[in-house]
Image (cartoon, rainbow, N blue to C red):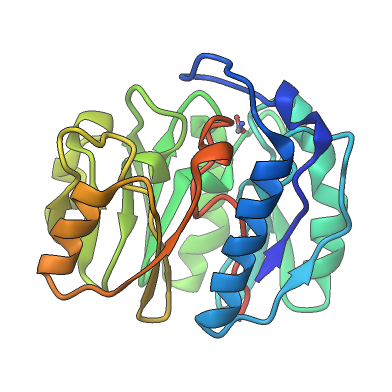
Length: 250
Ligand code: GLY
């Protein structure tokens, strides 16, 4: 798992759907360390990409690249302020995968890309445009992946709205995307009081999940899904979730 330190500048992070509220940087760092511990507990070896303390959103490393068995794709983030985050991530991936890239005017954030086996769903969002999606399709189709664009409604990224919690099971907030796009899967709805609860990080058959959504966690528990709970409240104020804070490489 590649991770990155929380910047002091996170108080100036990009915000799209949230009001700006004070972020306790020290608490965010403590929670990020706990998250890294859980990544280790589920079997990851951690590699911290050099910090980018002047880049507010650099901790959200997921947005900078996509990793597949065959290739890694460097993105072109939709927020101009985030584009300088890429070089050290590219350096870390270059020895592990052949690299492709999304080029302007295409834009694409990793948070908008949900991979389920050979199916890649890409959120058309304020960060990811049709040109970026088409470029991704051109890169992945020859490798045998399908690439489908799906809407992102009232939230930042597709993975704010839907993530995989099992081989054929997705956790979803239907108000934030078009559920019909995922009709081939078993869908578990977030609890209505917890709209932001659809972001879970699946590594192998283990699930890392924010401690802040007990009602949805109970739904998962009832299905026999075992969760590794992590505190994620401070980075949630910066519109970050548990998938955003690492880039999983195998
Ligand atoms: N603050 C996370 C993002 O907007 O990219």
